[in-house]
Every structure is written in structure tokens, then in C-alpha cells.
Length: 172
Image (cartoon, rainbow, N blue to C red; front, side, top):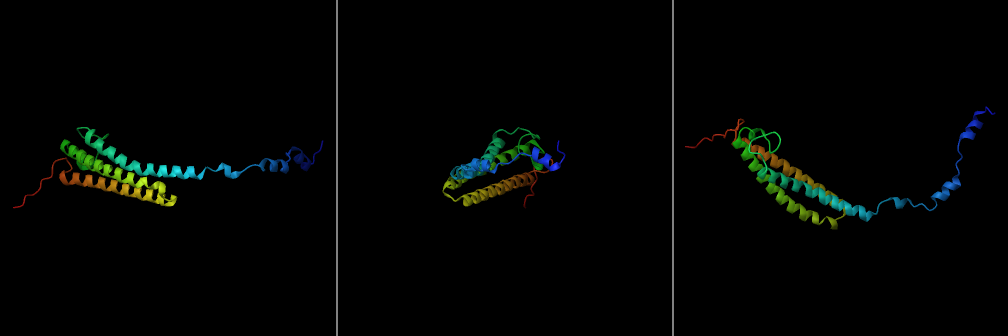
């Protein structure tokens, strides 16, 4: 029995046959592993359309839910909750009605506008389409933030912290 380490290593190491590897790779085409580019870009247009349309539809659904499905009294589970809108039943109902009208109206308008804009995505270049979709998403986020601030301001303007209506000073 041999005690030479190189002989032991050579005996246990599998031999690599380069010719057999070359013959296996001879008919292999790496480009066949890549997806078809027309399928990839076709699905990208669909993805951009879906991304652009989901925001307005969510606003529309929230608006309708605030108008028709909100509970009659303030709660911490469902409805548009803000500090000045939860003080009384009157403030709660006012806040739900205003939030429903604003969110529903803007959601309906945005749904129509974004449907028209996203209809032209298939004729655009890929980078232009993605940038247009990103711009639409930024506008939607900005409008949703402005709506939230507007509803909170209206609740603050008309009601005090305890939910009572603010008394306006009469001129004269």
C-alpha cells in the first residue's frame, strides 16, 4: 500500500474528460434559456397598465365604502378616521360623507383618465412607457395625499376636538 500523498490524491480524484464536456456543450444554445423578448415586453405593458389602474380603483372603492358602508358611529375598525372627525356622531358622519364624496369623485375621474393614458402604452417604447407609468403613479400618490389632508382640514375647520361644531363669529 502506498503512503505517498500525491498517489492517494490522484487515486481518489475523479478525472475530468474535457472532450466529453465539449461534446455535451456542442449543440447547446444559451440564448434558448432567455425568454422571448416580445412576450417579456408584452407583459411589461400589461404590468404597467395594471399598476396605473389599481390606485384609482382603490380610491373609487374607498370612496364608495365611506359613503355607503361606514358605521353610524365612530369606531377604530372601519371608516375614515381622523382626530377631529371622531369626537361626535355628527362629526363622524360629516367626515365619512366628505371623504366618500372626495375619494369617490377623484377615484372615478382618475380611473377614466388613467384608462385613456394606459391605452396608449402598447405603442410606446419600453422606457417611455415605464417612465409614463411611474409619473402616473407619482401623480396618484400626490392626489391621495392631498385628499387626505383636505378631509382632515375640513374636519378640523368644522369641528372642535370634542366633536362639537365650531361657532363662527357673526359680523355686525
